[in-house]
Amino acid sequence: MGWEAWLTLAVAVALLASLAMRLAATDLLAITCLGVLVIAQNLTGTTLLPAPKAAVSGFGNEGLVTIALLFAVVAGLEFTGGTELATGWLLNRARTLTGAQTLLLGPVAFLSAFLNNTPIVAAMLPVVQDLSKRVGASPSHLLLPLSYMAILGGLCTLIGTSTNLLVQGLVIEQGATPLGFFAPAAIGVPATILGLIYILTCSRWLLPNRLAAVSAQEDPRRYTVEMVVTPGGALVGQTIESAGLRHLTGLYLAEIQRGDYHVKAVGPSERLLAGDTLVLVGILESVVDLQKIRGLSSPDDQTRKLTSPAWDRRLVEAVVSSRCAVLGRTIREGRFRSNYGAAVIAVARGDKRLPGKLGDVRLEVGDVLLLDASPSFLERHARSHEFYLVSDVPGGVVRRPERAWWAILILVAMVAAATLTPVSIMTAALIACIAMIGLKCCTADEARQSIDWSVLIVIGAALGIGQALDMSGAAASIARGLLGFAGGDPMLSLVAVYLATMLCTELITNNAASVLMFSIAWKAASGLGVDPLPFVMAVMIAASASFTTPFGYQTNLMVYGLGGYRMTDYLRFGLPMSLILFVTSMILIPRIWPF
Image (cartoon, rainbow, N blue to C red; front, side, top):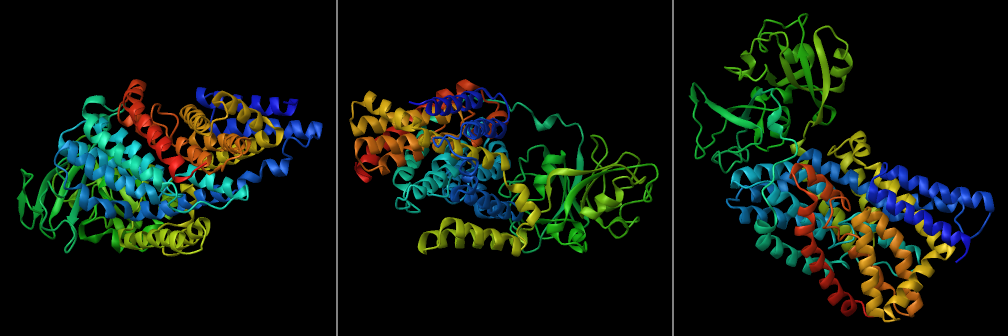
């Protein structure tokens, strides 16, 4: 190898090592390593390293653009509650741990096949907390299986995970025939079924009971909130248990106000009637989650009387000061909504439960109000003397449940267009993104904010480094080494490529591993004189096979703290899962895509 190949190889190894050791932010590390190669090319003028224009061409890769668009599509589902609408009716039926796992993991695997699996896991985290309470199990028995099934479900289509989209883009750049939309399903579906069986049979023994690293119950402040059972809504006629209101994390149902009659000791078999006012007490995070439940609305429909539409409002906390105009008056007497253009959702006064109706609460200095307000409220009162503090609530976007069916319809249309018509996946995602914004499922700002730019930067930089591995001859040299190790046998070479990719994805991100290993796999197939497709599929599957560490895949990292897991939990529970996927792939890939 020439010095260019050695330099490129050293940069790639440095990227792998620095990402594995978490020396800095992943996007900073990736762009720095790419910058080293660009500077070397500029100083020497060599043609064996990509010029600046070629080095950054990966940021225009079709797969990368598709991933960015899908973030925005998922934002529309998230802000309308489309995910909960699609799965909530099923999850409320769980009564045992096995039942909860079955009802949760099946839909998650299915949804992950058609949506980026990272937002799916994020949307399901509050659901898991509720499920674990309902069935009397530790969240640790549900969170890691949730991540694993999202990974396996994402292997079933080209849009299920960003890795598949990236590999598809690289195949197109090589001038080869693009893969079919359901091409990965030949491996993904059997692996998902086997993985689900493994989880249902072994998780109760291999996953210990863990407590979350940070407990929401530690928040001493308690909000009092009222919600009305919407007439004709989804909760009318349901019991407290079946409606999912029995075991709300960090929130308890204090009483039900039914006309002049108050149900003080609310049992799990109590049936909800249209117009019932539920009085709940709990922490901020749980009160925010309460707004997502379909079939509940604010008392007297206060939020619907606001002039600004739901997609232009947020949840805001405001602390009442000694100079507040409504101090000493009730919320109703002070006509808070009319005077401030904001609806009071809940009130917190230390850890006390406030008696009576929310509108009859007489405001005192230091009361914390949770408001449904427009951005103009923040601008007007951020430095106002009427409130000591006015701040945005994290994750406090006001939901628009009336748009949920539109969001689901857009998603179905996107999948249908990508599978049944000549329209490319990127084009279908672009149209879906425009439709989500146009139909107000999400705003343009929300779509932009939903995009994980660090992920896109890592992908774009890794594509440039992958191109350098190819141009410098480093990929060809590594491929020859793999072939020499495998003795020129295609099957052993396939095993070597799969295991090398799987090792990389456990140490670094799945996207970076797929890009760096693609060139090596393609060169290995060329050196053997065989069809590169089985090697491409091995890279695609193995790059997502991150089960034994929390760092290789974002969803694994998302559940790490919430489930109170340790590194040994991933190794003990994830190693058999990695073995299942490896054996399934090695049996099926050579038969479906012969050498």
